[in-house]
Image (cartoon, rainbow, N blue to C red; front, side):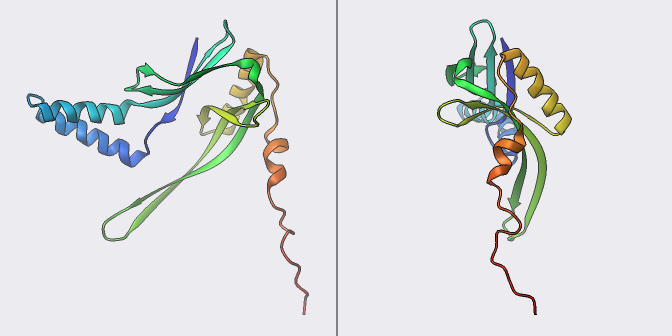
Length: 172
């Protein structure tokens, strides 16, 4: 069985708050409130989204690992998927303060998805920061699962609007 973590369940600001709750709970470990704070902080800090692939039974389980160790989610057959593709994405995280200031951070990532045959939905397998690593992983996953590699340009760039799609203006 192969397991891939595709990211945390909570955004970075909540994970930071979870670590503070965990640390605060350590100071009050002898009280019931301290134990509740430790459990809450551990839940926020360690819960992750993951995908487990079993090549022997040709099944995939996608879901959340609560506290990082208790798997949840539903199991599907690999035969339900049409192919593997890589999709570039830009993630923007914005933090706002009480004084109405904001700080935005944008990161570029490349996501490897399995595409379902009938519903045309996708299942996130893994995220990468470098395109070369994402494409190498998708080729490896495609050969391991024996399903085709679908190029990203054919599936997703067809729906992007053209630069000439707007109304034409006459030149003076």
